Amino acid sequence: MRINRCRSVSPIVSSIIMLLIALSISSIIYITLYTQVVSSINAMKQELLETKIKLMQFLDIGLAVINATNKTLYLIVATGQNNVELITIYVNNTYIGYDLDLTIPPNTLYVIRVDLSSIESQLTLSEGAIAYIKVIYEGGECYAFAEVVT
Image (cartoon, rainbow, N blue to C red; front, side, top):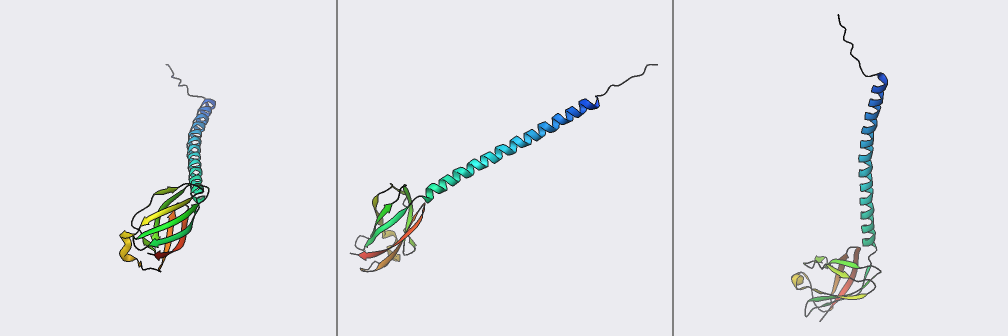
């Protein structure tokens, strides 16, 4: 009679195989998490830099006058050390009806001319009246009072 002797893997070899499997799984998990964390950190750094640049924008209104004859707002503004991205203007808390999308270069005095005919019905443009002006730009907001002249 013949006896079949099945040979199996030794306990040492099976332990080594299990250890290699565990190491490879943990390496895959580590590499995946590491790349996700690094990409998240880089995205946060980029967003922080963009926010810092926006906050470094500075705009100040030197003079604001509304011409009642041609329904135009004239603003003389001064900028700081960075470009300023103007978004829009409000007159007496009324949206002017369109966005400016204007970039003003750094360290300059700049004259902004805004047509107010689209919101004329909502404004009192009598001579001597005072209007509240709010300029919104990427770095924040600035305010001034404008006198209506003819």
